Length: 308
Ligand code: BDR
Ligand code: CA
Image 1: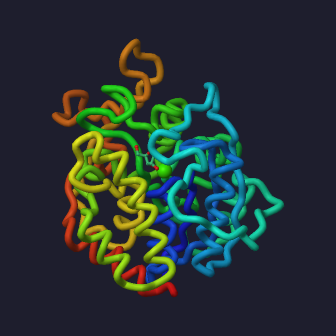
Image 2: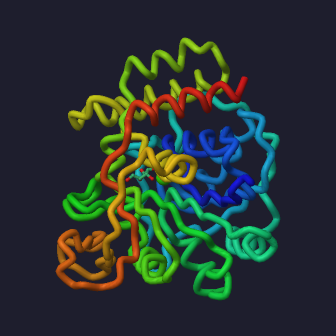
Image 3: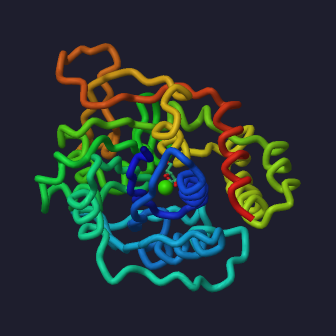
């Protein structure tokens, strides 16, 4: 049976690829897409999700969620994702319309109605997920796991200590990591190993498919940002959280205790990973450290063959 999943995202170049990977998979039944403010404002991340899905011919309920973090001002990332949040390819106006329902309502209702437990795949700040868990704690029973992109055991990308998604809404992250729901944390430790190189972007372009070409154009833009920081390729952060759900054997994880720093002078937004089990606390996350990169890139290539 296909695994029912909900993708909560802030597209975002890598979020867009995560969506395409999930919808191409025979292992997943994507019940809904919800959007959150993060890489750009909510208005833009919603528009980007609709544009990408419509471009790929995907029909699904797309619901907008939180326009700002639970307790803080929004931080956005135009340096990485451009003014639109998805700079690079030109998208025709989307014919897909956003749902009349909000993200929390869609998440709660989908979990309640599903026969099988639902896996949540958040690839942006955790605001929507935290709001759903706080307002409807009973849905925890219906959630199989949360496979998220966020955090890092060793070093941040937005501050020396914090990864972007967790930094934007640390209070929400704290609620999610403290929820008791099994968590797979695909943080920078793994996603920086999940890079796609320039020659592989060219392979995508040479597929002569509309969607693969659009992805190559996304990666042209995304790659320029990363090359300035000495990356060999573009880290495909968000697709890792999807890839783990499709093929967990591809990603090496360790069961560890993770707390979220919400008030540090230098460390707000850090995922404090008890790597050496100093605290002897419950292990609340499977933290990802390594990936079979070539298998992962092949998975991305294969996914593109599902689209025009
Ligand atoms: C994360 O932040 C965003 O820029 C990406 O979409 C990814 O979810 C990486 O830190
Ligand atoms: Ca993202």
